[in-house]
Image (cartoon, rainbow, N blue to C red; front, side):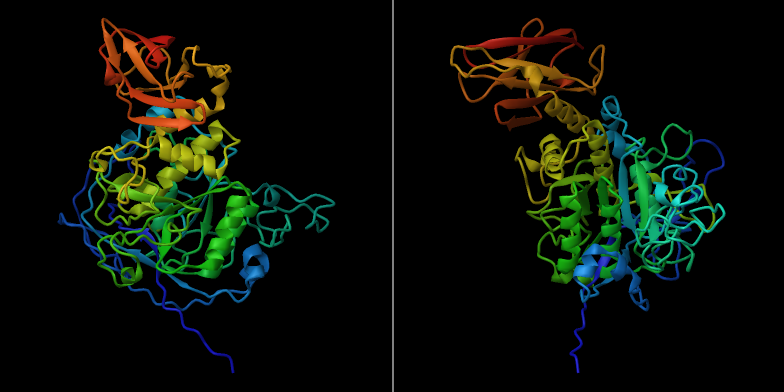
Length: 550
């Protein structure tokens, strides 16, 4: 008789979730409300009333009754290679805290408006959101879903599913594109094995019904439509892949199958706002396969830093980061507050790459039992990770040749050093710092245009050479950062000055080196108003770059 191995690993959606659900009645964001925060479990929903000011973590109770279905093994490349993979149960751990109406502070903090001057994304790029179900008809997301062209349109003579008369490929109950999934024209539900990753189909009040829609909203809520909020990427398509049931159940099979599906659909980014306290080789293999296909994988660092949930005990103290963020292949993202401090729940450790806003982010689109115009604010590393995923899709749209490793370098090298890092390049609590979309797109542009710096023979008698990159034309705005690239040949380092009724040494926010090219980020408030003459130089030689007006 075979020995039965029982796994007690707990895996969860990384959501210290607080939200205010409201209905839109006009084409603008609704006014604040004062709700009560109650722990989200299998029976409760957010209600209105009084609120508290503490962030409490109250794990939801989820009973796992669903058995992974064999179809997933048949269609997943990774699972076919690992047919006996341990089925680690996944749990939704919805934590309630002090909810209040969200604002656009997260996008402002990371300077998305300046990044949009250089890249607003591209509708040929896709972020796969592997999560709970989605409100597919939400007014702020309905036009953002990725369509599978192989399962769209009418069948024709000679097609795989031709029956003698034209049929709608999305509803003909046939696998038109031969990928192993029937009618998957708009994502897939890997829990129920059907083509509708719609939230609330089995339990409208389940723990997991809100999460996926909100995560998708961080990335791609429609911009400039006078409703709701803006996602970070104005044009990216979102591939909705459901792996959690409405009640919060998920297993290794569904997670791995979703990653393999996203890989086979040639997405650009995979967002994983979920976690586990246990290493999972099968999941890691799927992630590695995605990365080998030039897909960047972003994961939330987890909400276990306070160690006030039982499943957190098995994680490494003090920061208690979770898998898959612990895998070196994954860009690990922690949460920050509006004061650039680490959110107290946010997992951290040596593996952390960057932090991003994650406290009271919103208002975000949310499922609300049939409503298509409800919004909410939320807190947790679940909402920090998609900010990074959306920034990655912007970078890939700007420079389609980027590899996952190059993406990681751009994110870490352009991150802002926050005050509590005390001018250290990297710390366990903050990684390389808080992401800055403005600086990331500038650096991405510079890496595409290194030739503008010129090619010169290495000689101590040659001056420095340089170039300047900006995200806007005309006068410098007070919130603008310029990127100066320089090469010098007499010494191993270079500096930059601006001259405007005197000489001002720039105090860079970051100082980066890439081969022979060095980069200095300089905020526009480094010098007074007027016309700057920017020079790069060493002790003996200087090279005039350009003039800018502030």
